[in-house]
Length: 526
Image 1 (cartoon, rainbow, N blue to C red):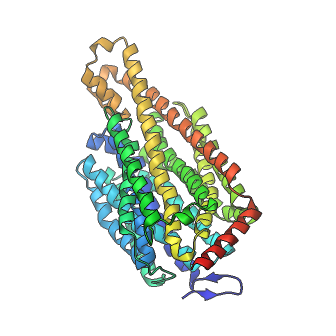
Image 2 (cartoon, rainbow, N blue to C red):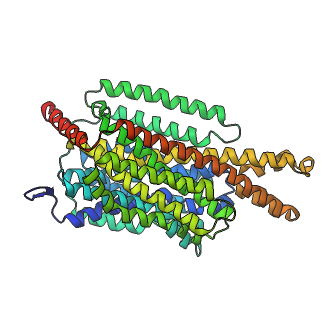
């Protein structure tokens, strides 16, 4: 049971409990990004095209995003500790399926399975912090550490994966999360309280199922939209997502115990934090996805060097987490969100303007440092605003939304940037083929292979060594075109997030007053 200080409520053995919860978040975030550095190797080993590579990269975030609301609600009802432990346990077989997948389809399935395992665990980590730590500076500090260190796992994944790929096969990267999952399982079982401020109301299972299909269809449609011949089917899938979304909203309005209570979701502090956080963390995942391919395919870094190249982002995310807590306490959520979002946009501006074939490492590192610092600073106030805007027995909904900032945001931004990368690459290389003096001798099959992905173009070059250097140069130039499309889209999204917070989010004093009003409303209706 929590112990009470004169000013705040904290759990017994608070540092150990927080370590266990952060480690659970690290496991989930490691799995989000470990595939990125291995994508070139996976593409060669499994003969995967760019669209299949996109789905492998986005598979874990897809599984997490589509399940997190439903599983967060189940945790609120049946026990957050139980859900967290199940997530750590299921991480083990999910990692094995991915590591030894015989083809791209099985690997995509394994990645989605891994995401669902993370969906069992991740929403409960923030929910437990909110339930165990009372309102105040210590909760803000705990959330900032959880956000900075936990999210830093998404950046550390490629670093560790790059090291493993120097000695082991591509599947080894999917086993990285196994040791921390076992440690987290032991710590959670031993030190985390079993039941804290949980709901006794029944779960809206129909709403949960609708939320799964709604999010899955949206992410899948966006991921495949740029694939050859997939534009119309992808639009149909996206349209289906909106139809299911309509029925989800209708269900939430009518259900006696809604999965996602729209009374809380429409609160200004809630929905603005959700949208801005989604863009910010999604930008991190998008930068990792496109950037890892750029670093290896265009700059020619080894797997280990490519993993180490993103280390500035992880360092800044951890280093900035206590700074984020201080900024929230001194400036309020609005100004802290603005600072973080502006730093993320600055990182993408560096990528757009400076990342070319001859880019020195310092320009790669500074871009990732900007993005890492911005994400760490922005996510702390976003997570705090979400969890403070709802009563404690609905904190699973808030933590689920906080996870959606990362997972749905990551899925959408990876899918969006990946689709733009695919479309830009295919358009650029098609133009180069048509302008080539050898255009007449290039078969339709070879042209389709060249447009499939950078890795496929390299394979063609190996088949025709007399043209290998020209093919590789064309593929690099085409990749840069697609990457620039992606960076520009990320900048536009980031500027949109800044505008939303600037014009719609209240300043510090008004934010405090609104949180007090929410608390009074919740007390009156309980």
